[in-house]
Image 1 (tube, helix red, strand yellow):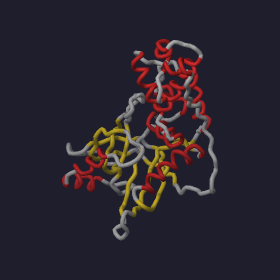
Image 2 (tube, helix red, strand yellow):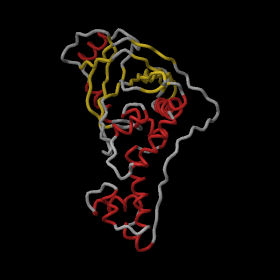
Image 3 (cartoon, rainbow, N blue to C red):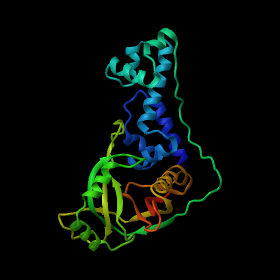
Image 4 (cartoon, rainbow, N blue to C red):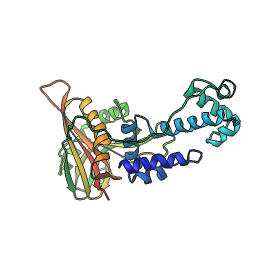
Length: 288
């Protein structure tokens, strides 16, 4: 995975003045758009769009220092107007493009290089589960893509579920995990938007095909999932586990994440405040 990620960085570097698309970029990493963005975010601390914007503006700064005109540089890096470029550059650097030319001011953002530093030797507990084809059945909506913190739209979705919907979900539930899950899929491919959307479903796994109009049914092909159990303070332990999966386990494992729904469930401890057992299910295949 590290080799593929650094290949992606090289590709971005060679095409900073082109119209970069996530579909092309993610192919170099061999994973889906959404999962690639998560891996990139947890490894770098930046969204992919932020990284590309920073690199473009850093190279623009260098070109301005070398005497290129502001209008030429703006067009070179994909800005439709000089005003748009000037606003973006000032927000990024704290000074105007003209200040680079007149005063020699400069700000840089270097190219990333991904490496794994082994610290502490702490292993992650996981198991590999092969599943036959099944359906995700539940209530869903498009929500903003968000890798950290509480997603208020998902909270609203959970609060909207009726007793009738809950009863049908429990009646349909017949395969592992026998819990209410949170699943995410169908992320926007336009990564240049500051915030894309994805579909979030709260529901159950079932082999049943007959579902009422109260619920949505999402067919899932047979596949393999890596399952990561975790227990501790909620939601911090779940978020920490998610970050470690994408920043530590995936880059060093023999598995690749694939384009299928990832899901998780959480069981709150009745006797301990803000304490929970959770599992994160990530769709994977053996690396080639």
